[in-house]
Image (tube, rainbow, N blue to C red):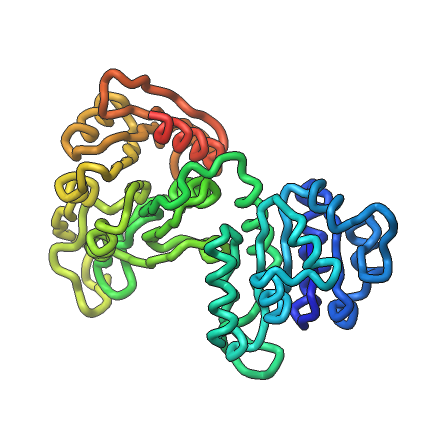
Length: 388
């Protein structure tokens, strides 16, 4: 890890703790300017290793040996000055010399004033680095040290850690692929305060999205109401409430996608007549609600998808699991379907584990059963879909 002289360096001790907690070893190069923002002793204590600075290295040639040792090279925060030096091959200090000597994946996290970040020279330098295959992660928007709010804030330690994991992921077979995923439940409102829904929490859809993102894909997730935040990852998140809203969002983004994963638990029905006012219970011992069928989003996509698009569906069933799933696979023109019994303990809604059967459209391809944590299952699903 390289740390340069920006105020965002105060976040790095927290990042070092996360990296160590994840079981990784870390070596740190600290520029002279960075020592004004974070103390070497703090970093030595947290990393358990000597900190490398301009005046603190010996005959071991750290700018060569450290980069040969590392699996990934991270610079956070990276100032506009260091960014420019790296883009133009200037190696006038230990950190920039290490960059020149490095052959492992390099992740750069810029942090600076919004005008400095938007400056044409900075943007040109980012373009140069990106064209060389160096990953420059866009900074966040928010309050900056200079007192203004804008784009230039360094990503949070948890977000940086995820990017490190992504760089270290053993396969990147979805690079340059676009994956559209639906997740979570839908809320079909009867009146302004009541709705029909289901127990879906979006965990399986989130797992499919994470696994695709780690493999290098660009990911968009269309999510119903869920209780967790997708924004720590590099996803574009489109939030919806109803099945009709989800259908509109899917159609809008359909042409963009190479893979479409329909993991959402979409409501089959909505209120035939929505009440604009809260339905009162006074004087009503019984209440009859008429429902109308919602569009079948998977079937709609099956009709519209291009020949080279892959459509993956899920079938949450409670009986005749495989038979019902195969019927849906054919009727909806899916390429693959994941069938699971949501009545089984530790499978289906609102749990971290699942058991699913992968059924391909091609009858010559093998059906497989996966069981375990949803994140692990998602990895196995992508392994199989990509290999097939």
